Image (cartoon, rainbow, N blue to C red):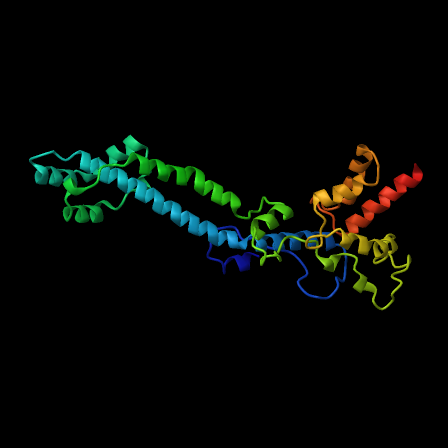
Length: 293
């Protein structure tokens, strides 16, 4: 990793993903859980990748808005310092010569950032070609509208962008929006490579035996029976939402405390969603509790 780091010029700390990035089964299952967690992180980071481009564009917009706001204050201040009738040219030259102090005065008066002010030399040359008396006065209404964009609209826009804090459900909602053409969104999913799949035992349609400890799953028969019921519930990207899964469990008639414990045992990865395997475990536990009475 140290050698790899020398090839990266970015100041940010690089995120390194550990996993088995090929199509063959794992030779050892010792790191299967780690690989699955890393792959889910990778899928989530890929899903929010468009955010980085959008954030850069929004940051550039914010920079421009702040500079426009500062420039409006400068122009308004210079306009306000001009005499009404005589001595305009002399006053203008004095203001240009004293531009550093003018900037400091404006910065303190309106609580502005020094980085939002233009370069003094270039700005002085441009001011020399202008007539301060012809400048517009400061428009407080327009400044208020700029502040609203910076303090309300931009933060609201940022909240609409996918982020690493989103759950799979909220991430999909943000990326999908109301556009029906975007019905396939890459969201974090449990990688099938590390799960129990029907393809794992295509060579034997009756599955693995108990003697095969690495591949045998005691609930595989239940999974085969419940798979069609699972898909009838309308899973999204292979997952039942929290509400869908809750409604299924509530229909079993078990009390709240029992359902809470069943949920904790079934939601293995604690993402609030049920894939097929987690759904099978939940249904098995419900049936066991009901039979036990």
